[in-house]
Image (cartoon, rainbow, N blue to C red; front, side, top):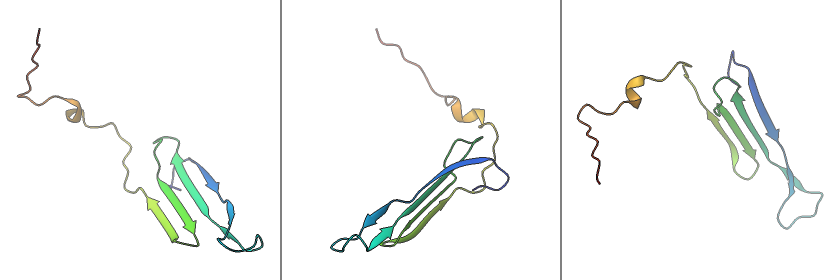
Length: 84
């Protein structure tokens, strides 16, 4: 979860049988995903799988502000050509 933000998330922990073993021997995989309500982008994801270990993704140093308008302007030397 991101600090100071209201988040919504989900955790999924399916249990699957191990290959070649009886049903009594199960493995547990846990997936968690967190999305802040304001940003609407994935900020934290954790995947814990006994076969591969734990993989974590964290989005950090996010500054919620409007994007720079220069990113959405055409370059000064841009020319629009209309073909007929």
